[in-house]
Image 1 (tube, rainbow, N blue to C red):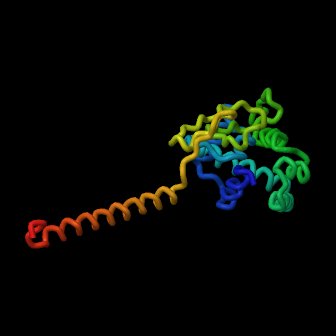
Image 2: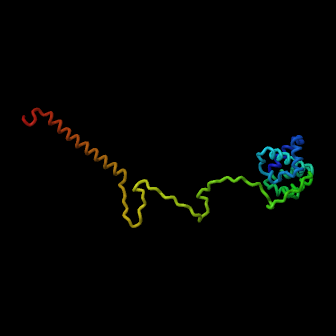
Image 3: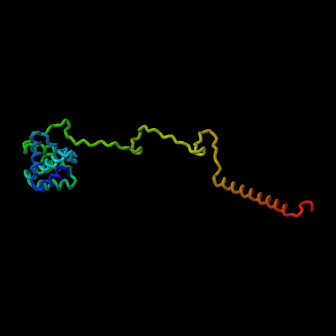
Length: 209
């Protein structure tokens, strides 16, 4: 459902416009500063004056549709939108005009100047541009991409060049096993030497006896 219809129904259900909103709407009609109906299909402006005018104008458009073409057609419009129809298609099917045609007949009914004709046949609200980061995986094939250069962390991680001898390191478990045997062997030698020294010191008289 477009915003103008959603908010217009809400304001219409509350009754007539308050005097300040009605005066603002009449000033916009007289000064030809009405907002286009298509611009009211998305969110309303954050500027307070335009926001108040958006609600007043949405009320006027909704009231025009209900009181000119009866409540039954408005119900049919809501049902069509609920079933997934686009607003232009739903208006054309039920009323015989799209959003631009609605604005034309509505302006004529309230005595406003004709709708300004834009160079674009179907002018749409300009979206706010938000820069995004496009993942590399979704870029089209054939797009030139800079290939990141791998930084080697050790000589064993280097990829060998074709035709050159490949140097391989011994497995880690083998290195640790050999280191353990060396430690045990050194410990045994130390124990033997220490025992030999202690035995000689404990012999009374040494070699003189």
